Image (tube, rainbow, N blue to C red; front, side, top):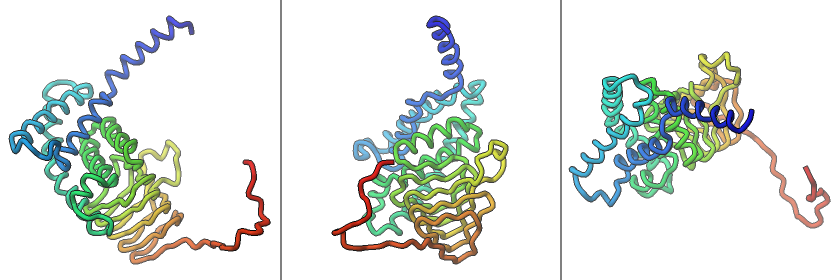
Length: 277
């Protein structure tokens, strides 16, 4: 195709995308400001109740603008906006329990405020919980965009369709992956590089439960990979680091990976250190 045809193709494609895609920059700004309003007040919280009321009303207007491309008319936009914002107080309470769970289980955490402002796991969880509301309101593309914004900021990838109970905590968090059909109970704790994924990536399985179920009070240490929709980790279990699981385990189990580590003097060292892959 020549340049003129290419540019016309771009125009028609971009016009279609504009009508379907949410404004990415506006969406990122919205979720950041919603998070800050709830947990990390700007200007040290100066301005009092009136400032909070003003900022909350502004967020509603911005949300209406973001969702306007998805919905047929003003009434539908108002209805979705009301449904989303009616859920925010409930989500807020659940997130405070998540933050408290992090504070209670992490010796490095000195205060709840530190968790709210400095823990990427809490930010990713907050965005997930807001996105999960949108997922159930069938604003699924917007929900996915929000969790991908959190993914890009934290390295934590939580699908908005996952089901996660209260008092959830992620320690460190980098490279954590939680798939769409995962079900996590209450008081679950994950460390960095945990993958809760699918055994199969076949498109025909898109409507089936592909990801594991993690029951209450389970701790999963760094590098563990748990796969499969039929895999159930029984309550009060501990999954050790680097474990690879594709089958269920009973409640109160301890699952660990045993590896061999050798220590020796480095001089002389007969094995080659210089090699090329």
